[in-house]
Length: 193
Image (cartoon, rainbow, N blue to C red; front, side, top):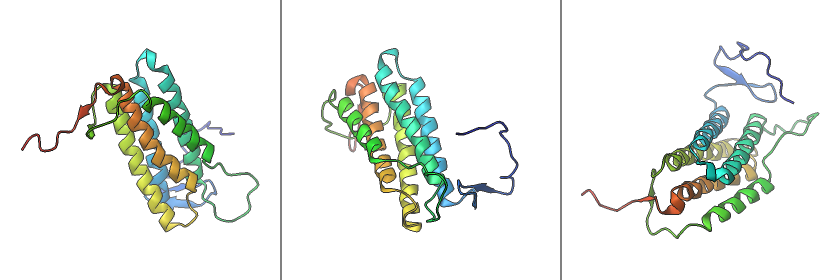
């Protein structure tokens, strides 16, 4: 259970922050960068949700699940497996979360025509916001991959797969809110030469 009754603690005034284990790390540590970027992606998804139309409640519910999953992921990244016994089970992203995301991708993608070109980020405000969330998600994924290489076992494989799949989901969702792909702005190679 999380209880936050005092928001500022002053413990980070020296440029460090605590992991779930209590270990303190620099705020520019790769692990902190990774879960901070996951948090940034989550905030961008929150902005995207505010841009959805009333008839897009199903997508909003999917995105709410994603936002909760991203908090799970943040908890996983903030509590690395250090091999020491714990008196609690650390929260980890699991394959079932990836599978749900894949079902959501398939459901949204079923309404779309196949692409014949790359899509420029934009179209509607909701689609543009989802594209922004997608690019932040990709950055978080790159940081997590770097962290996994630096700290073997430091990021669970389901978490890595989840982030890879999430950017796919956000891409499909952006097309779906763009009039089911009809509002997509397509890249025209060499158009402005």
